[in-house]
Amino acid sequence: MGKKLIFIIGGARSGKSRFALDYANRHFSKKIYLATCEVLDEEMVQRVENHKKMRGPEWLTIEEPINILERINQFWEKGDVILIDCLTLWLSNLLMRGESDKNIIEEIGSLIKAIKNNQTSFIIVSNEVGMGIVPSDPLSRRFEPSFQRSSGDGQSEVWRGF
Image (tube, rainbow, N blue to C red; front, side):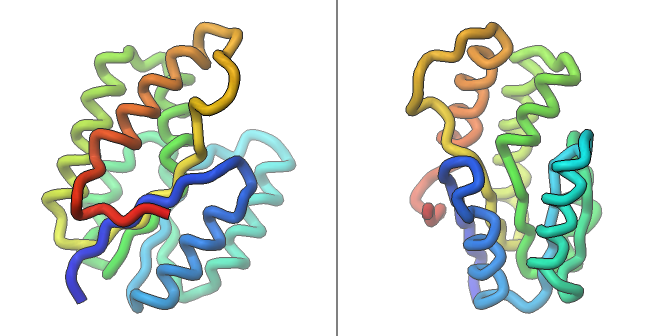
C-alpha cells in the first residue's frame, strides 16, 4: 500500500477520533497514536482513558503535547501510520507556552515538511475553527490564523480529507 495522507476535521466531540481510529484499523496493521492532549483536570483524565479503550492494545501510544516532530522522527519506522490527535490541541499547547506567531508558523512548516518527506502514512485529526463568531479575546484571535495556516498549507493533491 502506498503512503496515505488523511486529514479529518470536524466539530468538538463530533466523533473525529473514532472515525480516524476506525479508518486506521481498517487500512493499517502497525499503528502509532500520537496524543497531543495535556491532562490538566479530571474530565480530561476520563476522556484520555476512554480514548485508550477505543484504541486497544494493538496501538503504540505516544503522549507528546509539544515536541511532536521529535516523536515523529523517533518512532516513524515502527508504524505504517501515525495518527496525530489532535492538531488543534498541539497548536493550543504552543500558544499557551508563549510561543511567538513566528515560531508557531515555523513549527507548522516543519511538521508539514516532515509529513511530506516521511514514508509513513499520516492521519491528522483537527477541530473545525473559524466558522463561528470572531473570538472575543486576543489569544483566541491569534489561534485562528495559526490553525488556518496549519490546516491549509499542508494540503495538496496527495491529501484525502474527511
